[in-house]
Amino acid sequence: MGSDDNKDYEDVCFLCHRTESKAGGMIHFQDKFGICHDCLQKTLDAVNVYNKNAGMKGSAPLQNDGDDSEKGKVNEGFDFFTMLGGNNPWDMMGMTNKNKVKKKSDTKKKESDKDVFDIKNIPAPHVIKRKLDEYVVGQDKAKKIISVGVYNHYKRVASMLRGDEVEIEKSNMLMLGPTGCGKTYLVKTLAKLLNVPLAITDATSLTEAGYIGDDIESVISKLLAAADNDVERAEHGIVFIDEIDKIAKKRTTNSRDVSGESVQQGMLKLLEGADVEVPVGATNKNAMVPMVTVNTTNILFICAGAFPDLEKIIKERLTKSSSMGFKAELKDKYDNDENILSKVSVEDLREFGMIPEFLGRLPVVFALNGLTLDMMIKILTEPKNAILRQYKKLLEMDEVELDFDEEALKVLAKKALDKKTGARALRSTLEEFMTDIMYEIPKDDNIGKVTITADYIDNKGIPIIEMRQAGKSIEHKDVL
Image 1 (cartoon, rainbow, N blue to C red):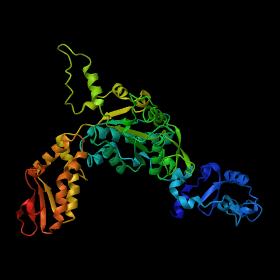
Image 2: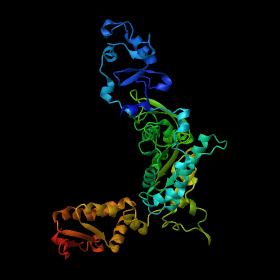
Image 3: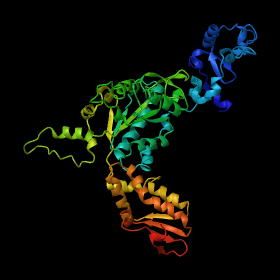
Image 4: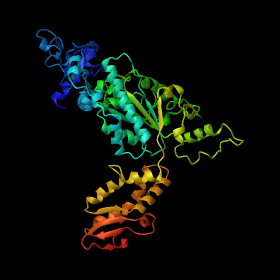
């Protein structure tokens, strides 16, 4: 980091971890880090600063007399680390700006600078959705809800900055959907479109404080890092917590549920809004990491999970009303419903293992649709970074054209759909058939085009390979 970058950050006391704005001016050692006056005085009292073996020159370690410009400096010849009998820990740790906290701007600066959280700088919902359409296939309802939710979130922030009398409550979201339907990809794409700090994390490693695993506050630490340690920006950011279904209450356990209900209860204060102490430049609190306070009142939380077996709970609720007579619900009525999660209720989520207090802080609940055959085909071809386009780009670097006929796409999509892992199955399925081609094609510089056929995907035939010069098709066995 240059000197200009350092001006934007305030020092953190190496010992007590208080920032410069709270502890006052720092005494700097070897231009690497600072210690506040209080901590230095306590340290000097503890180690007997007047001991001749400490290597001090002069009667006092601090130059606090005379010119104000000399205040806060260490007397010439005073070596703090020699006195402590050790080496400079900052040389060993590699202190950078990631361990410092960005200075808070004063009122005049805030008024003159362009506020990044101004509603004029946030794209309208239809603009956000149009951008999401370029990368995510289908899921129109989910894209509309997220677009409106993000837009309204920053309307709320702008309203609070103006000090409006009407306080707008934030609408944290809970996103449901089968694996591979695009939950995480939707938010990752959103992060590219918005110029706001956004942290993406998952709940699988979260545990109650004091147990092995990440503390609940670690999700805010990641947001602070995404905001370049700027507390003000982080306090208006977005946190996406994936795999939220993994913190459901454990139904059969005789031990303390430190990664289930305890995590849900610990997250209540984050979702509602509270001052949270988080480590800077790390995810776990320890004695060597500075701490900073972040207020989560204006942070938007988006939670997502696949919620396996939730479909069974929904079906039981929908079919339990009547089992006999002309108006009875058939037990298998919803067995083939791909969008059964769209009928979810708070009661179903409570039965799954989510506590009512947690659900109450996620007022916006919506589900993504399961992928159909047509959607799988579109995922292969339509997005800007579609899988087929990626393979075409790889072969294009070898000056070879890659093509798929329509029947091959259908067979490929059906094979992936049968794996029941959503869009993730497309790459693994395609990789099975492209490995040999990607390996053999670079051997022959005369090959100009490769066409993947349905017979090749069904293991009944070979791809059509055309030579660059003669333009004639040759058999697959002559090349592969």
